[in-house]
Length: 283
Image (tube, rainbow, N blue to C red; front, side):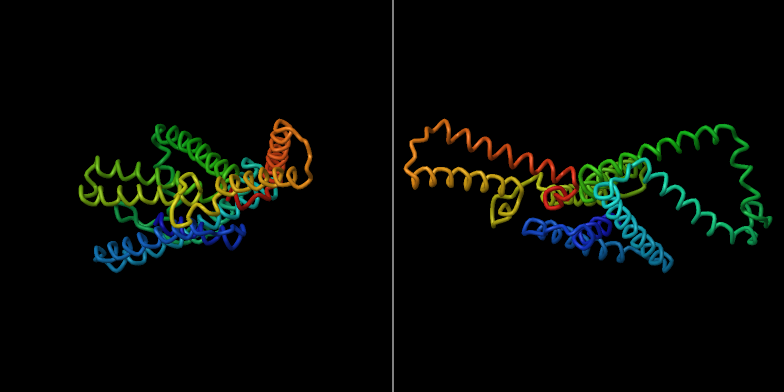
């Protein structure tokens, strides 16, 4: 369901973060939509159990919810200047409250165990911690999840939710490799999904302007193209002013002015990044 997550981030970035969308963004979105449709057709052709449709629907809802969380986290981290550590604490408190509310119902529900004896599920937790190794494993798992979530929010804070999508694809590639090692998927399915993930990585790199396509006008509104165009306009303006005013200004002075103007523009961009207002270039 990674494609639902990526597409949801695209849409939410436009609606919530007011991301300006240009031609190369539409190309990336079109590639994702194409493969989303193909994967939906492929999955539904291989679903035999009706319960599997409900499972797929739940996975889609979860993917969209995670996309909304990442998008809203960008607002809290970059615009409201909330620390990733504080955000993780708030998230943990909120999740524990929800877990308690949803788990409270199961106190009154008796579920059969492996021997068929019905009892409250919470009364059987002691079996998990009876093995001391499980306690150590849960402690290690706690710190691993903590570092994982800190890194997620750090990527979203410094870059954008769509940049994090690249890391998500690499995570799925790792899971795919583990699946083929343990023989959980067929070899042809492995290579099909690997090719799809590779294309998705390229499309996201195009969206984030790490890859610039210099044809069909896809490069027209990228950051590097706009900077080059602005520099040319500045240089041409200075040259035109010199010719019109018939000044005897040396070429060294003209170059110095160009460098000063570029430094001034760079300082403005830095200030915009600090204020969290440069949504066009960083989101």
